[in-house]
Length: 383
Image (cartoon, rainbow, N blue to C red):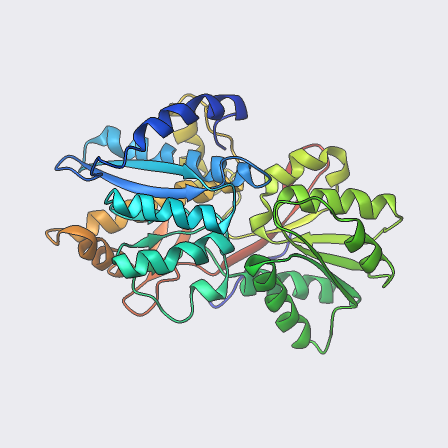
């Protein structure tokens, strides 16, 4: 598939569910998180509900790296304390305050735009770093925030590549199906910018509510405009529901999704109905062993007992954990959270197994890497 550099998995459902009780046991408000021997990160994410696989897979990939890091005994042990927000902003805000009250060292790996927007002001006020949220929203990147560090490219980067690909294929009648919240609006804004730069406008717009699969109205609205392609900005369950319903209604065009959809989760939801669905990616393919990063990731899974699924979401969690650990390594004698911030900002340009990242005191967005992948219809992904 098309590759572009702009400017520049997890536990099984059953195994994860069994582990929820042990996670809850860690959540004791009277305990202070840090000690002389460990660093505790706080993660509020969807571990249940319509976006659960995003949180589960990202967490599993991050834990894979941290387990590997801890086994080396190179520094303080890194642990993640998790709380389930079900991909709901109000629950995320409550969880975030709980984590801050427990004195977590940093907030890490939050899943989603609306949830991250609820959490970042709390982190900023408490002067606690907010590391590698699983979102590409510009509203979390601008204006610059000293506490916030982003691993992934923006939704503007992803939708630019999607629209470029559509334009190159001669597909100009484009509709947008988007989640009716800050995430969907962020992806819509990027799509509108990319279309406008080519003198185009969407032929139809339709929404779905967060954590809902009620797509009937969207299918009718978009179908009546007779588009050639639909850009989807939502989570995997609603996107899968839309694709199935649209095809049943007779739509024969193309579907394009941004990375937040959760590629493997979408493939699992759709099965054979996923054939030909395109998804933009912000980390290299975990399936292409020609890349050093992929070999390292898959070796780590093999050494860890194969409990982590190989997919883009777990790969992103692995990379996010690796980036945070690099910041800690570079903090040197500088203590505490300011040391982590300084360590991350000192990275400059660095390659993580062929995945280039750049961070500085003025730029906290590590990557603008984007490429396209396609579902094959047999549960696999081609890049």
